[in-house]
Length: 215
Image (cartoon, rainbow, N blue to C red; front, top):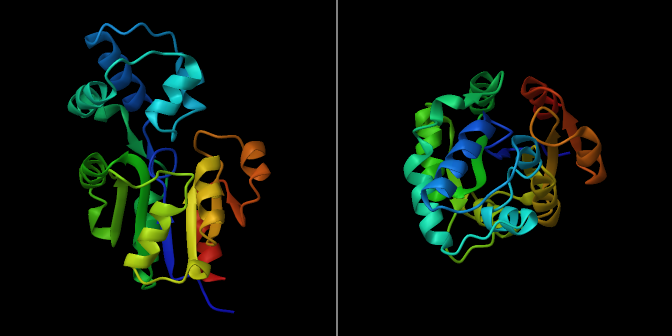
């Protein structure tokens, strides 16, 4: 049986504990635009990973000019970056994967430029062979399209790729692209929710990933 040779990671809730940075940047943007809002941190955490437009539709928040909101949000995000931190064993795991000669990619619904800045901020850029953020004209997770682009660019067989993420969208994206999938339970979704998506693997700590890759 051929071994996994490419690992694709989600960002928020998988590599970076970022809920507070995202939430406070969003609230700041609402306040600056004088948009009425009533969304708790707890409610918001259950939707991290969704595109903002989908979140706003879910909680009935009206954003008249979405592009203006995103512009403000991206401008203030790094004012709150110190509220984010890497999860345990992130750098150790990425380093171990690269030492094994595997390819590493990022797949996030964050905009391309923001994804690159965040990865650089946490000095993880040296580990990544490809970064796929949200790009105009390309569907976002759970669509398989961005993952298919990554696999095509890296010339990787989907059956030898592992999509790692904390949400239903990561597992759905990987399944639809015919890759292997691994849910992480330490992020922003429950074990029960992830199990319903039938991931190939489920881990409670990122260092468990190496057991999968080595076996």
